[in-house]
Length: 68
Image (cartoon, rainbow, N blue to C red):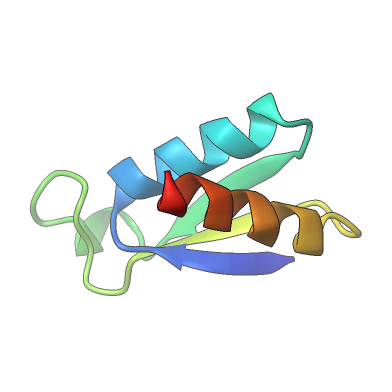
């Protein structure tokens, strides 16, 4: 289930690591290698997906991470 679109791969990696540290399986899907002209930055961001049933918990964790 897609829950978030990170600005770049650096933000996506940080979020995914935080989610995994809190017991939520997460992964990213970007707009493809061709869209990453500058290392880590794509035109359309990086989509973050989590396992079904964990969407709300994941969104709350992302909010916590961003407010820290």
